[in-house]
Image (tube, rainbow, N blue to C red; front, side, top):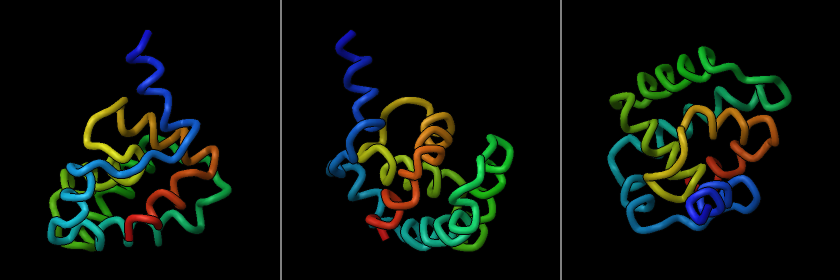
Length: 110
């Protein structure tokens, strides 16, 4: 039960970035990839985002920044959850997108 409360917290409050998340965002290309992702997400802010579309956006952002997909995925996790660990990234992102909380969390990390 304690794990459930801890893992649900990022859906109710914007978590602070822990040391590992901050270090991830300092990696070469991490912020550029998040910026490319944010730019691609802006026109979709009011739209539903599906898993396939989300995966495609991650690939496009990684390519735009010249980084491997793992860099954008870890950086997105850091931005959304404030940590490099937590619940499933894609499911978390899709839920936060529906509530409009994904873009502000990404933007704070740019």
